[in-house]
Amino acid sequence: MADGATESPSPGGLRHILIATVIAGAIGYLIQFAIPILAPDSYLSFATTWSAIYLVVTCLSGLQQELTRASRSEATGSGFRTWISFTLITSLAATTIVFVIFSLSGSTLFPADAGLLMSAIAMAAFGYSLVAALSGAVYGLKDWNAVAGLTIGDSVIRSLTIAVALVAGGSAVLLGWAVAVPFLLAAVGVWIWVGRRIKLRLSVDVGLRRLFRNSVATVIASLSTGALISGLPLLLKAFASDAGPELLASLILALTLTRAPLVVPLLALQGYLVVSFRDHPNHVSSRVLRWVALVIGGVIILAGIAAWFGPTLMRWLFAGFVVLSPLDLALIVVSAGLTGVMCITGPAVLAANRHKWYTAGWASSAAISIAMLLLPIDAHLRIMVALLAGPIVGSMVHVLAIRFRSNVPATDSRPTI
Image (cartoon, rainbow, N blue to C red; front, top):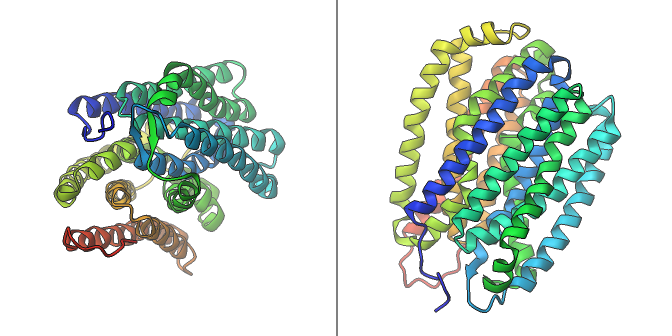
């Protein structure tokens, strides 16, 4: 039996990941909170660059999801050649594709310093491709210390580079590169730490072609995920600019600050959830229900806090921004919770190797959100409708996939989709 083949994610593993996620989330939250205060003149460009980079990051996290599903610990390390080939090809392809795409739109998104900021986004794509590959491998090996180290290391390095950029003047270009470079530095550090272990113990359950084919589905789904989360500021700027720059800036700020406590931790736990659901296929529905109940409970509390204290805090901390109503802030938190539900149902579907359903859930959610943003109604109203409608539809698609799977007898040999 391969080493660790039947080992399930342990409470200790979850504890490591949660602690790392809390630390990384706190650092990211502090950065998002500090920039509009310390570098207000660079905020719009910074928010756009951050959104673009993390849209790419979320998209490429699909590579991590598939590698996590496919990776196991084995004494012979027979999967290393497949893994390294996959890593090198995807990192170079991602860098090239991202640079080409942003070259076409860079002058619109970044009227000033487009070349330097596009290069920073391409660098982030290269670095995070390596991070995603390493993360998938160490999740598969169930090396929770390495998972936690990768999560914390990236964030700690970013806090330092952002601090240096602020001290050096806080320009949009400096801040953009400060966000991008830590991915590569973290990947190098973790490879030095666990690279030998990956060489000796990694097994992959599919060949290179199948790995690429499966990854196409997870990357498309992750692109849709990114459109709903990190890429949302770009979508709002593209499809709801008639809301006006002041209201749009306030909505983007509120989305960024209120979604972080819910969505970011769940995104960081995607690999853990995939392994957990994969290793307990007969208890997926009950586990999903427990996680969803936890998220909904958190949403109710956070929505109340946002409605009660949010307007006052916005007025006090961000004097140059439009103060949003209690209802707006509560609905933004609720929309984050609905997106968080998809971050639970998605791994459950993916763990069952049902890539098409996984993609369909996220893609339909993004499509509905964009469709709502195109409605011929007041911009403020259609933004709120888009935030809520998309994740509701997407989570329903995933739930149907889970229910359909749970109703198929264990002896049924029909292929799943």
